[in-house]
Length: 286
Length: 337
Image (cartoon, rainbow over all chains, first blue to last red):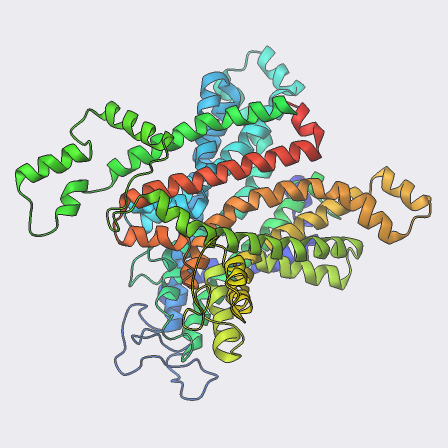
């Protein structure tokens, strides 16, 4: 408890981080309660109400606060449901990466030898291919769906988790408390999970926060290329993809989804910076 | 140093072979038989099918197919596009200079602005300027670049009319010949008046869009490296000796702060080649990124396979060079483990 109070105090010092956290909480709230908050169905097309401008521009309709897109779908509702899709992708990628990254990273550090070499070689390979190109390759094989986006983005980001965990586990392994635990007969599995793992978590949590924002950006990029979530799913990247013909005449249709991505990613990154400062005193700027 | 180089070189070999294995497996995982995909709706008669299978080596045992694939690549044969029927290596070689030119410009943009910005922010640490710059850097780092590109097109091209919307040069005005493939050089060589400036104009927006993320990363990295170095004893000594602040930060501190920055710059290059996919798509830039995305649309899997192989080779080589430069700048890297 004293720990968490200390953590909060350190986190609070970074004003940007607190703002980021507030925005992230608001976004999570919107994502969860989108069906109740959204004024319309995100995929319902209102005939005769296409390309309406947002409320501060002349010619708007009070029923569509942020206007409508090319086929008359309510922008605000689509953005709200889009928060669901993006946050879901980000969280899913993060959770899977954490679990797989911990398993592979710990195994590499503990078993060493061939297992270590094999795991690190595979990670090298993944990193040798530019991330978006690899994601595109994976999508080309398994097909463009929301689930496959999550799989592709997870694979692409995995090496960072594995390397981070392996490095911190290796440095922990050389410490006295681990030797002490070993000598006192703690089993290998317990040593890995109960003794060493908790001490490797701080940098991993920071990586997880940054991993969420990376995943959201990458998934939106895939959506933009038409390789992510498919229409009519209200995914922010995909919403941008078909606004090119409208961007001069109806710039807001293009502006809103991008602003949504930027705000989300920025807020998570600001929060991540604060987490890093609070969790890893060595990296503190102060 | 030589031993370090040799070891790094040897370490890339397994990665290279694994890469061949993955691209080989990938083409076999793609849904649909490669022949079935090609035959179209009208069907194909069985003898022709067998002929095609034999031609593509698909009637061989799988290990033989892999052996042939590896041998072909080692001989510089990266397959043939099913759509244009030209060797992948030729297509890649024709498009790669465009991507390379864009990547170099974006990197130059990021380095030229990023390092001074980081040094400046570090020297005014905690001030409003520092906070504003770091806020901007974090925003740039969080930017969805495909959207950033669209915004810049609307602002700069459509509203202000400052820059062209797409392509590398105005093909209506200027004669198009590509002795080097680098438009900046080719347009100069062509001797046509205004061609070079037209090429520069076409490069501005793509450069900004592709360079934004590395600019943010480099500025942040330079700042934190400078802050660390400024605390060191030798900097204090230099200050105590009465050297001018500019000489202390510019010479003593910056030199050492640049070591991690160079490492980060190297890491960014692979990311830039990936970012080029989005940038090239937005600006219709005829490079390998756009070509790869289009290959998916055309179901041109050999192009995808060969293209990914070639891009990855470029990234592996770049990373090798970056490691060597790092080893040279920071002997602790080359002598340690």
